[in-house]
Image 1 (cartoon, rainbow, N blue to C red):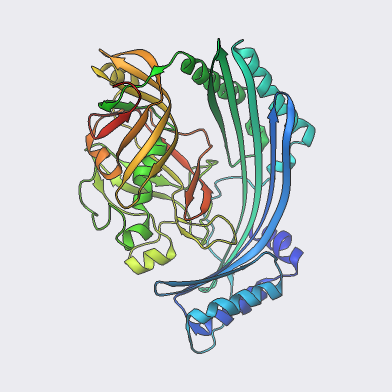
Image 2 (cartoon, rainbow, N blue to C red; image 1 turned 90 degrees about the horizontal axis):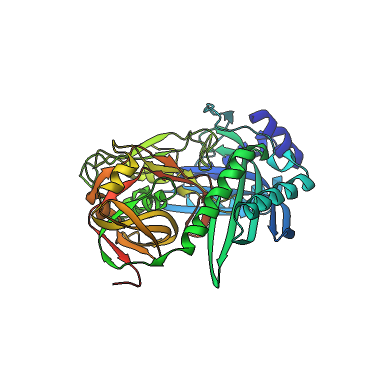
Length: 477
């Protein structure tokens, strides 16, 4: 991997290890705590199909270099949308001003220790030609339309990415990675009389396009069509405080937003998270264990190394209800005096890294999903979620349910529409009373935003019963 990236990314742009060593030496001639150089080339391709026609398509390649120097809590960052010796030298000269002049430092770069690869290096864009990619979208469209005569409109999209990354650090370590990423999305519109409702699904991961076999295409179609047809029968959602059951898999996005961001190291170092200074405290009900794991092979949020060259791994954040740790990058770990967890991530070479989630999920409990639903006298079963918002400082969140059911006497009575779930992240986990044995990650569609940067992530959880702490916003009181 390292040699391949040196040949195809560095040498192709007239660069060698010696150029990075000299640039790091320029930075190291000033007193800084840490510095790195991040080179990246990304090939991106997308296709969008609607009503059997290609509505849009896009292909582009971007490459450049980002250089960072850190002194105490201060960070200097410079980037260039080109990849050559001059851009490298100019960026290194710009960031070294953050430190005080000192003795000149010589940096000798050597490949860092290799973490196990979590994905292959083949280019997914080249795994099918243009005609085959369009045919793939036409196939899923045909399957969706054939699934039910009430499906009147289908929209499908396909995205492929291929990243080449080289990282050189002031401590002499150099690292390389090649990252594939694919995502297929499907939205269907169902109509019954004058009423129209939609359903969505999709998936992907760090694979090539062979990942989208017939079984997965049928699964995406079944999920999207079922959601749309269910919503055709939906009644207005109830409103008020009530027992809520959250479905497994993608509803873990609530966990990601309401709890996960609050466990990132920068918010906790600055004291702006509701979880700041609470290591060792009980912050959730017994049985609740929350994990961030970036080394699950092929997953959308997985990385063979983070964007600072550290191996990703399994970080237990909450164990049996007790807060045990935060997600850390190099800078925040150093300032907090704790180990790095391999969660330093950046959107691209033009972005400075920060602590971010990878694949974040809650582990299994002991209940069957149907057993949990059967335990409800009156309440809401939120099968799936759409969008949501959270305030990191207060922990308050609002999420919309894209599919939900009203439950009485342990039985699903009818689907409801327009339900929003309102609560407080640090508080809601205290009211988890039943945890399912069906923990699952989402199908591979997650994108996380923070400070203007977006990165691919995974979310997940088992079916959960939450007795209080949640309010359902709806149109029926």
